[in-house]
Image (tube, rainbow, N blue to C red; front, top):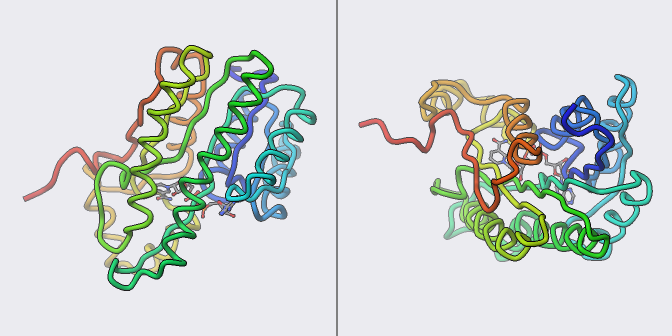
Length: 253
Ligand SMILES: NC(=O)c1ccc[n+]([C@@H]2O[C@H](COP(=O)([O-])OP(=O)(O)OC[C@H]3O[C@@H](n4cnc5c(N)ncnc54)[C@H](O)[C@@H]3O)[C@@H](O)[C@H]2O)c1
């Protein structure tokens, strides 16, 4: 078991990738802090992990609020007994043309997707440095951290920023033995993307942009996250691992 007794915080743990990632860590022996703004959903994740014999606790966190983030990290450290890994999966997105995007909507997406990653990583990094411990951070970027797609200006900007912040923190934390990486994903069927799949024509289009002619499922991303958090990736830092079924590999004529 790669994470036996290790302390792992996952944000956005109530749904989608964050939720799946909690299960994968728990199955590898970790003690998981499932954190989400929707604490009832985080509690559901923690309860189901406990029912299947794993170890997990639920925490409320708003990743845009510095105090909420610091409280979550310190409480998780106490309850879990140690902290080794942070996964920043909390995220939202808009689907609005840039000419119609309100300042409010722009700010909402930027605050959760990039300020949230900054605040969580900073609090986690401060904790590890004060404790003199190594660790690993994995941020959820996107294929839209390396290419763009119409009607997602704030989302695309925020995910490009996640790729940049990941490199920046890797530089600053490298000598402290804290690795920082990101995962950039193709379309994965989760509550965030569920509305795409309600339209059969659009679902077909999604399938066709991936070289593998299918979309991804949450465990395929969670396993990449675990790799980057594990000792198997001991010399990986500052990288964004693209797990996208070949979406960004090229374009069809
Ligand atoms: N699903 C995809 O196809 C896809 C593709 C590329 C990148 N991503 C990224 O992966 C991450 C997870 O996406 P998902 O598909 O699991 O989404 P999801 O909507 O299923 O889950 C996101 C979770 O984040 C939580 N959250 C939202 N705002 C929060 C806040 N302020 N504080 C704490 N928690 C908050 C939500 O309550 C929810 O539980 C996101 O960062 C997303 O941008 C998803």
